[in-house]
Image (cartoon, rainbow, N blue to C red):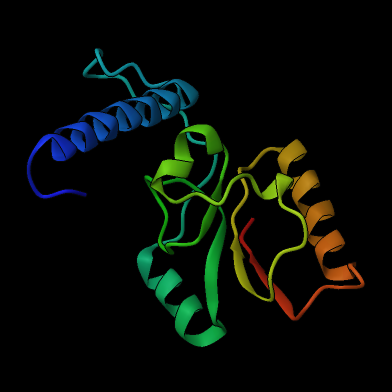
Length: 142
């Protein structure tokens, strides 16, 4: 970002708009009403603690999360549910829309719904069975 001047102001304005859209999307999706101080939103899945992600990186070479968001990613490379608002914050898009993944190790922590878990299993198998696939590994949390 520019340090001073009109370029900085435009950058700040764009950033605030993108941040608002991101937060509004997730607040709506989770079901949180920010005006209700006693409200609590729903949760689609549980994230592993940072120590687990650190271990996955160091011991298994994991470098990408398949189900993350700009609000909860550990790695700078991640896929997310809402590419339209997440992409400006680094999302590579939806895991379900990606073609063949590049060689590597991936953390997979899908939301705990039967439909998403079924789609995830099918997508992972297709990745592993693809004739042009490089070396792939997936650490799956369910």
